[in-house]
Length: 387
Image (cartoon, rainbow, N blue to C red):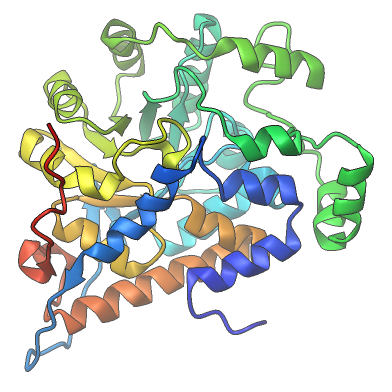
């Protein structure tokens, strides 16, 4: 095994071992990719306060997220087409999360189905729902998640209309990939990926095929998907889903104080400060810059999680210090999956945990519960002074 010291090591292996269209799907944003870039670079503007002569024995990274015990305040975020990064990718990531004592969130647009994850894990997982025009499909997905024992429903609010991602269009992204000459050549130079993909039966969107009316093959799937994201999603529809689900509800895609207050008053168990990894509204502020004002806006009405931009344990610490109750990682674990499968996801989580633990110690803290703004040096203009 190569020596892995950081997420960037896994990213380099991921790029080498995974077909270009799927690596690019992971490592890209919409339009100019300004927000995609600033999601990570804005973390670098926050500096850490070093503290010395503090007893560092007995450090703890464990916490809770929506009442669930977690070994560190990190959940695996929903990522579409994870099973195209590596065969059976969602299953492998879910098993790694379970071993690490962390929540795994399955995307509606996953390759492995809700039932696949339930069959291969023993810990309850979270299910992320996109609201489609087909209410029958939405109702069925909720019921399937309940039947599988999912402990939370993550409702994504910022994908009513898709932001344009130039790389995906240029690569002709699809699952499974179309067998064009460039795609065949790209797969041929990655034999391990190809052999694993040939050996699995899971190569298309199994939460949709066979569950959505009239969707039975790739062509009907693409047509259905392109037409189904509901541009009329509003709080009335969210309330209908909340009432039907009846369990813990997490609202994802909050990037505005007014929306955050509305979500908290609505009764969400948690909100996720997120700009969809920079893949939707390009030109929006980074999640980490919006986090402090959203934390102030909701107070203790609901838990606040931070998504988009986390690539290290230091990033996790900074988000917690700014008031997040938990964090979510997407690309960080996908790089591990694409690099080395389930073992790579485990390695990514180990890297983040070790960085969090050591950084916490050097900041003079023994528990993630004690992290706060006193651990940071924050630029006076960090949140921005916009009219």
